Amino acid sequence: MAEDTGQDKSEEPTEKRITDARKKGQIPRSKELDTFVGLMVSAAMFIFIGKDMALGLVGLMRQQFQISRAVIFDPKSLGIHFAEVVLDGFLLMIPFGLALMVTTFMRPMMMGGWNFSSEAMTPKLSKFNPLKGLKRMFGLQGVMELLKAVLKTSLILFVAKILFDIYLPDFMVLSRLESVKAGIYESGSIIVHCFLILSSTLIILVLIDVPYQYWKNKKDMMMTLQEVKDEHKQSEGDPQLKGKRRQLQMEMSQGRMMDDVPDADVIVTNPSHYAVALKYDKDDGNAPTVVAKGIDLVAAQIREIAADHNVPLVAAPPLSRALYYSTEIGDEIPAELFLVVAQVLAYVYQLNESLKKGKKAPNMPTDLKVPDSFRQS
Image 1 (spheres, rainbow, N blue to C red):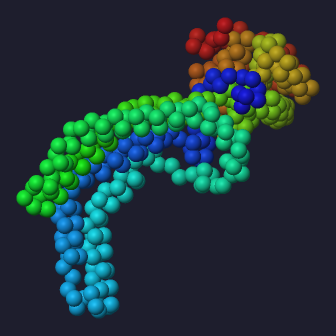
Image 2 (cartoon, rainbow, N blue to C red; image 1 turned 180 degrees about the vertical axis):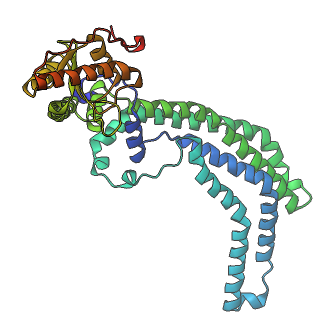
């Protein structure tokens, strides 16, 4: 961490850091946004179905004041009557409850997305540490929460005072309306409009809190250079160990390659810097194959092994470079090099026959032409 190493958190969070943070439940969330959306949905529901809810409540109240004497003095009937009233009230509130339920499930999509973290739900003793609690209270997060609370309270009180002054005359004349039903409608309309306006004022807090929560979440996930290096080591492996592993693999590969040198038909050399071992099987009908290759020390080792096993060495600098750069071990030679390699192999076969019969060795061909596209400087 930056506090432990003295390094600044100057590096962008890696994908692994972001994924691990989500698993821990560390994602940007705004309580102000959640509150604002919930209140606005409630206000909208009051506007669209408030009248029907008011009518239903009036009906329930009228029903309660019209209980017959027989029902009152019959415990069973009174219980049934009470259950019916509760059910009617529940059915009356279902649309409102469903709207809030859907809003609760959809609200996370507005910021941070859905995320279930069992780790975040696991109790931790560190959360009960009073020192950490004090640090949170007097830290940047605590100060920000205090400022938001003060701003929220001030906004609500300020707007509430304005609404009180505006709607006070309307409230004062409610008693003069021709019926109780009209009074309920009018008072409900005033309350809903006041509720909507008060809820709308929280948009100011939302516009402040949402960018702050994104900034704070990113700031908390920023990494030091050492953390990036440590994470890279964990995910990719220690570079030193990877280097040793790669070196060991190369040594094993070279060991296998050197085992094939004695079976080669010819070693094409530079003559000192490059060495490419070729093997040709006339029976299988395929092109000659590269069984070993190398430069400098590896080339010297190939030449040494070839000399110990009487494998002919042919000095053909352009061809050796062309073969080295255009093939990998186990590859057949490119079709463009068939002709020049055939000349070399023909020379090698003539050389072997002359040595067997004790004749004079043939002259090395001097017209070995490597295509320009395969020439290496």
